[in-house]
Image 1 (cartoon, rainbow, N blue to C red):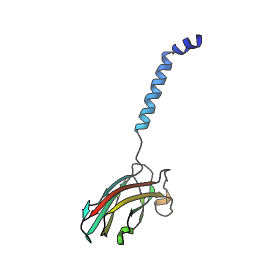
Image 2: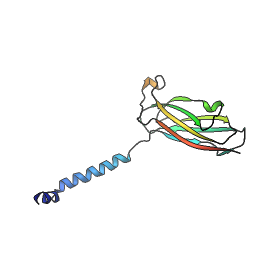
Image 3: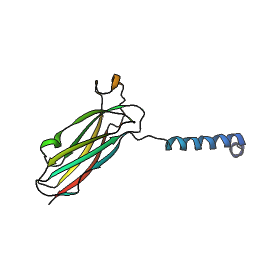
Image 4: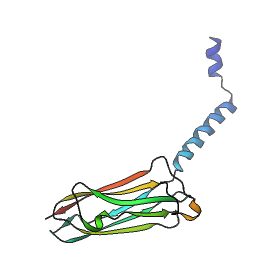
Length: 145
């Protein structure tokens, strides 16, 4: 019984400390930066043998730079510039935009993929971080009429 009474008689200082810790933890969780922000644009429809342009803008909110490998992949084979892979240094003050021009005769699901990799000679002074989650992608469908 005495233990129960002791638990219910918390001092005001203890209650204030618990409240401050609770508010501080919530504020810390709201202040998270996004590793990769993608804006993938592709037409929803196209005609057979029509040239299609896919555009991907990639940026980050991290203060550190990263080595980013950017490419497209699909559920059916697509030839030409579709298979180009780009590797660049990605920093918070300079987003990158990538373009792919290609032809397709079939409806295709396309994924724009950004891999954060460890590679020397890309970022200045080789100063780059590699986050634990290192693959980001967006999927869109191109319908061919």
